[in-house]
Length: 377
Ligand SMILES: [Zn+2]
Image: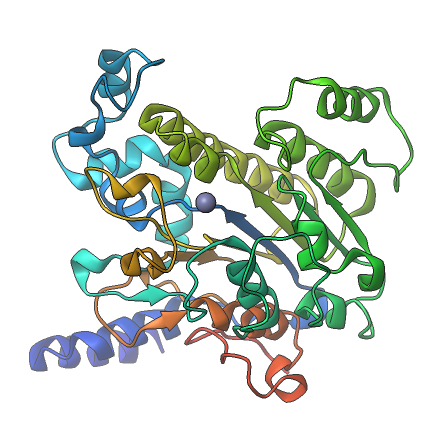
């Protein structure tokens, strides 16, 4: 079998069919997952640009003007390298040394890979709604804390056999509670400054709840990523959910604040959190070899020298995002070059397919799963 595949590989190489090469590699290296045992961790970091993900730090933005409060030379030493490959590995080492080699990443526009949002707003709530339901909704046209009228794929999956009571969502931004519709969704939906009280209290969780409530608030509707992340880890360890959602916000807030160095540090922290999540996965027999990790952002941002701080309808290029994934059923395609565009609206159906469910049957207008997801039925 191996020999035959190798020969086919050579044949394709001779005819120069690079697209076929990519799909062949996907077929020969990804394992077909048994959805009844699978877990999905969906992580979003708000407003992280594809430019930093694929090129690393932009040296032109590491100026005193963009980093009043940070020593620029330290940031240069930490994050600036001579090639984009080295710079991105310095910024997000776990993404580039584990997730991409063992999975795939879409959205490097320098290589002709297009990943974008379809909602037309290019800001947060429309992006979370699109991700969680699989389609843009023109009614979700502000970041106001309005309970989502739409059912998310998580709410639906939480009612399916084998998945009931095995879902949880965490968000640094308080509106994440509304995006999932806390009143209706039926699972732990912990967001903003909320204490976590749905699991037995431990000294560590008690301290996290106090820190969240009592740390001076920089943003009215959002806590820092750290308490949210470590709270979600407490939940993971206590409850072992099959569907786990985490939304982080430092990347967006610190870019709006115009601190490029703090924005880079936030992206680097997200990478360390992903590594920590994966260490948890590897240390638990329920999760090890049965968990898919997906990372994306809710929207992009504008370009240097000024618009990188912002995003929205008036910055059309802020529709561009990245989508990365690894785990059973995810093709080992690595960094995607060229190919058909993928959209944020494909994430909901991807999550469902990974646990053996069909979101498109339930919500025909939702985007299809990402290409090449392999699960047995
Ligand atoms: Zn923003």
